[in-house]
Structures are given as C-alpha cells and as structure tokens.
Amino acid sequence: MSGVQTDLRPILIAGPTASGKSALAMAIAERAGGEIINADSMQVYRELRILTARPSPDDEARVPHALYGFVPASEAYSAGRFVRDAAAAIAKAQSEGRRPVIVGGTGLYFKALLEGLSPIPDINPDVRAYWRGEGERRGAGALHGELASRDPVMAARLAPTDLQRIVRALEVIESTGRSLAEWQSLRGEPVIAEAETVRLVVSGDRAELHARADARFERMMREGALDEVRALSLLQLDADLPAMRAIGVRPLLRLAQGQATAEEALEAGKAETRQYIKRQETWLKRHMIAWMPVETKEKESYWRDIFAFIQR
Image (cartoon, rainbow, N blue to C red; front, side, top):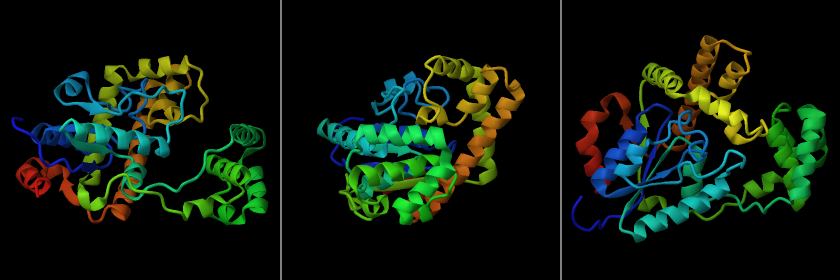
C-alpha cells in the first residue's frame, strides 16, 4: 500500500475456529496497511504452531504479526497479561503508522480490551502454591465445601466439580481478604474505546464450520501435529497448564502413549473442536450483537462492503 496511513483505528475481528477470520484479517491488513495482533489464548504458545493453526512463516513475512508464539508452554498466559501486551502492540503499530488488526477466537480477550479487567491484585505465590497443592490432594468436592464456608457467594456460582475456578476463588479470598465476586464487580480501564474501533464478527453455518474444522484437524495431523505433541510431552509440564489443555493435545497425547488408535485420536480431536466452536458461538451471540456480521459462506462477495465499512 502506498502513501501514509491516516486511519489507525483498530479493527477487531472475532469468530469461531475455522471460520476464516485469519484469512479476512490478512486481506484487510494488506489492504489497510495494518499489523495483525493475536487475540487467541492458545496461539501465544511457542510450542504449538501446528495444533493452534498459527499463521505460517509466509504469512508473517507478508504482513507484520504480533503476540504469536512468544510464550513458553511452561507459563500460564492470562487475560491480564494479554491486556498489557496488546496495549503495547497496538501503541507500537500505530506509532509506526500501521493500523492494528486484532484477530482471534478468545472472547474474553476482546471483552478485556473494550471493557477492561477487574483490578484483582497479584496473588501471593505461597498462597497460590498452597491451594493448588490442596486441590491435587483433596479434590474439587472437598475444596468446594471449604469455599462454601469462606466465600458462600462464589461457592454458589461455581460447580462443585470445577476445581480450577474453586482454587482461584480460594486463592483470591485468602490473599486479598475479599471475595472474587467483589473484585469482579469492579470494572477496569478499557485499553481502547469501543467507539474508536471497527468490529467484525465472522460466522457461518454450523455444519459448514464443523466440516472446515474437521478438514483442518486432518491437515494438522498430516503436517506433524503428533510430533508437536510428542515434543510437548517431553517437557513434562503440569497437566493443568493452559497449553496442555489446547484443543487436540490430550487425544494426541493418548495416541503418543499408545492409549488410543490414530482413528480414535483423530475423532476425539474433531469432537473437541466442535465443542469449542459451540462455546465460541454462544459467546459471540451473547456479547457481540453490535459487531458487523460477516457470513463465512458469503465472505468473498462481502469484500467491497467490508472495506467500505472499515474506512467509514
């Protein structure tokens, strides 16, 4: 693109897995003189290029990309870190005359950008270690009972089997002296004002999305997803780390360990992906009503309207 880029309003593109949002982001970034910034909670992990469908090296050479593959799987990346990293990436792109094109399927990340996060203080590391150890030792049911006696409001909100969130609630009340529910009622500062953004949500027919997702998982298998998971397993990471819960990791681990056949792992990976698409679609319908819809099956015919929309 020639000339100086004058419209630097961020363009936000959300959508479920396999909806074609990354291809749309690439087309817009090339046309609008942009930089693509990741808003997918799994594409941040360095070790999972294939299984999280990160942009290819060729794509990264065509258009500047930020926040992809920069976090080791041994770390638990959070929405709080994303807000800080995204704010810096947006500011850097704009300072260099590039329009931020923020794309991903993690609804919470977009919500955090536009609304801010509750200002929960950092948790004392000793408190975190204690309750995570208690979770492993005593299990979700026992800790839910503990939470009910210490923070009945949060206990009523959480399923007795949801160990991760139960532990989080116990960490917060012990470390801060206040209920997580109380902290969550406090709003943070938005990174970007909604009125100063262009927001697109890519959707499509459920059956078509499933077919695209199935085909993509098969392609991942051909491109080396199993070897990627084998390499991840050699790191001997905690099974509760986010990277270890990425779509497809667990069924492929079972395959690598001889606990499942290739066909069973493939079908399990596809099933996980379909379940994730359903959760994403539920979030999009609930939180992104005011975003401009882009239908997957009609996307090619939408180009002119889309470019006119982002330039308004």
